Length: 514
Image (cartoon, rainbow, N blue to C red; front, side, top):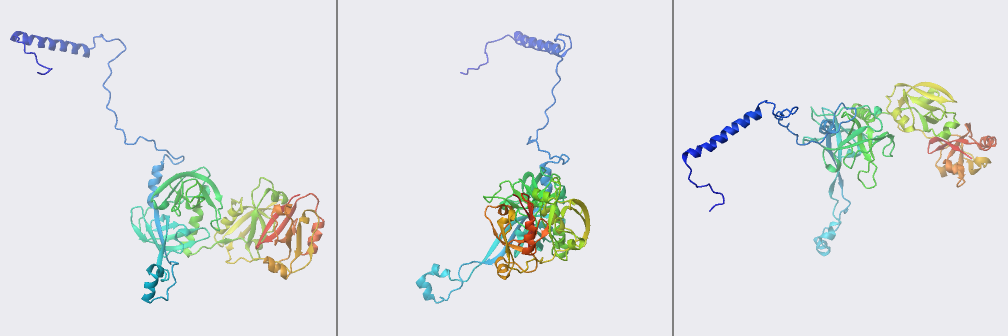
């Protein structure tokens, strides 16, 4: 028998309908009371209206970060624009293995006696392929791609893989090892591109995204900021790197560094690493430099650089005081002027401090060097400088940089001198054939050569080295031992001494302090 049963007691027909009817009437009365405004409910408590159905909730409720100054554009938006224009590059170079150089033991007897494994080491070299992996950026819808020179250098075959999985063989338009830039071309049209930005307007602290193919992982996006500008890392001859902490790893080379508007500010080139992976210090070629190099490679197949014809060095506080330049003034010190150069013809002098070139302030030798190199040959520029504590402007025409810049040497001689004071720590001699051979000098300039520097002396601390050719002391020429002794004898005591010397073909200023 079930625990839940319907009662089976007999009921009369009359009683069976009375109870349900009473329940129905009571229900109707209660319903009227609850839905009518009879004032029976407490005042001030209106019956709430039915709530609206809840709105549909998106799958992801995470708030997308918005980039400052990007008009509300998010990282997602930037990535969607840039990723299709970043390609994967595979470069292949044919080579031969080092194993074996051929064998005279062709007789099967030797193979049976020595064994196949031993005989393999004498077999002819086998063809092998070296493969390089990198990234590139499409900058023209008709298939022009910019990347790094070290990604495609000496490659026999270059393949480009697009974001839509298409594969192309690429033609190498040109390379420039001095800036580590290369340009490729694929036969395609209507390709997505990344717009160029003005890298001169980039500032430290700006958000940047690095897009590339690290370790072959395609279409990877990392976020960081601009950590520094104008970096020199000893990677290329002309360097003006953007430093960023956006994660850059092997395979990112040649990829895009973009700003918050999705514009190309740099070409990712190198990392500083002790492990081979990202350590938060990456370098990119600025877009202005990369764009200039690309245009020349496309138009001429080579890079033609501008030439001013001066040797320059950093303007240190010590040198500023020597040349009467205010401490708050930034510039570049001219230590030498080359013969038949634009600077020579325009009247530049040693000791000039260049503070502005072609309307742009110059605060370092690398900055000036890059600016001159990127100047179109034949262009007239104005250079502002400080000479003898006075401002001066010089107009000149930039020439093409010679392939081999002339190096100066020294004149023969034989006498030696060891004056007192700060210069007593330096022993100099007039050059003769034996000394010229010892120090790798040539007999074309006037000066005396340093043959000894006292250990631990102010001269050694200032950077004077054996083999340096001494040209001037306190702005006075010392082409002979007699001239050197005369200048040294009249040096004021307990005061700094300014030296101009030539080392490995370059003139530099050094300051000796008591």
